[in-house]
Length: 628
Ligand SMILES: [Zn+2]
Image (tube, rainbow, N blue to C red; front, side, top):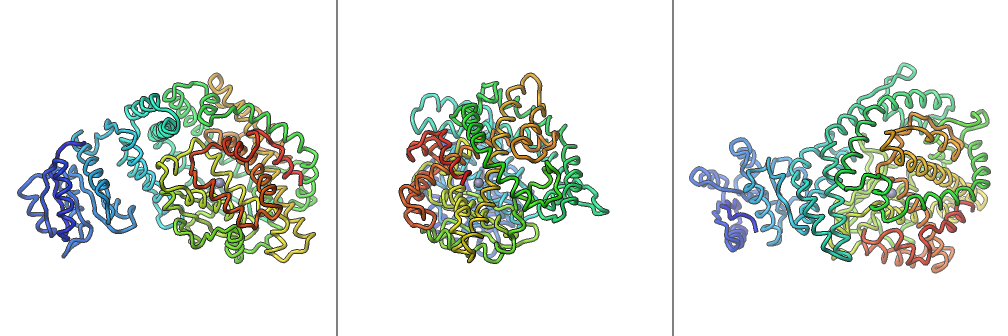
């Protein structure tokens, strides 16, 4: 229960005013009412209020005009906007401290007043950083925070907004990420058990991550912005660094790719000093906040697995795969890069190969959506009519071409965003993201928010994206949708398996390097030793030594991908056994997946292995798929 405060409710609907007044008075607050904006102005001339609840549409005016006045004249007076509009971001940019959606529940009303009054009691908005919430309150506010951050990120990513204003959201919620709050969550966790302990652990981890990113946000933005504004000159043309990188995927001439790739690699490595500083600072903070100085052990604890055992299992499979890999590599390097390629081509050609450019005329941009919808439909998923999934397939100039899913508030608000470019990669990307979207949109709404949105890592949700993407490796899928002969279909499916094999070997080598890197970090700081050697030997492509920092995922993300790889192959084997070879076009598959989706983000990847009847590190099914 927060402080008792004086509230002014401004709304032209007497029923809403009454509802607010009666309920807030029950909580001990003093409430006044105003039915017009002028009445509200008059009331504020006469009386002092601790907070204002303001409807966006008040008879004869716009509540946002009054809000703007208040922001100038009484910047510390908290204002909650009542709104039926879905565009929360837009409204929050008006400077409101909170939004109360219409229709609202009494909890939402009381909770908002409680929060705003608490902030005030502690001396206004700017010094709210010492407020400590109970875990349940924390989870509620976190849900709103992540919703706003997600929606802001979405608007920028899809090209609706040109400037990212994440910092203002972070600032508004700065009290979510304090050391006091972290300690409180930790204490609650220590005394809990079972699922509750897991929930508190994830909340604590989120708080810890937020503290680190708050501390580093300014430096991170600075690095990001200097990379964004950096240009290189190629054949008289000024190219932003990111555009040069994108260009590498579509340049048809081998020599051009080598040349541009070299320029890009050199410019990119120029930011390594800043990357080193950030990485060192982030590592120090993580060690201090978590109390675990060893980065490998810390990540093992978070993921609940042994990274070194994982690495050993993967290396074993990679060795067993070597012979088949070399055949595939020689054949597809020849097909994709031509006979004049260097014996060990540079990594400048990787994006071009991944796109499987020579197959582009078959897998057209125009058909991508219809084919993917039909593919998912055969499993019983009506992705276009799924009420929780919002598809954004538009082609806007500023829209990021990389497909993604933004789970703003699962299961209810899940965005699936793609922008077709042409080529088989579009189809694979859509199916991959559909796996994430169906997972988040299919979780049980009765689960606590933590188990709908937060995970220890990404290893679980990637199982579902991988299994749907794996459909594009079924030869019959190519016959069915593209009218190819059996021979052509088998050939194209093999091309996708080549890409898969390439990535598998690359990630396995990356994990090995990252384990070495972090193992010596405390004594030597960031060192490139082993990076280029290990990746080059694994893939047959020459990697640059100075790319080691920009190629590093935070938190051993490579391990999450690799676990999902192992698991989705186990899942496929399971489906073949239970549903049949045609698992990829049977509604029974959809039903089984739905059961897994319902559990949200709660299970670990290793728990899924047990349900499928496999040992977590059993790479047999994966090896079987790669060798196909
Ligand atoms: Zn994914």
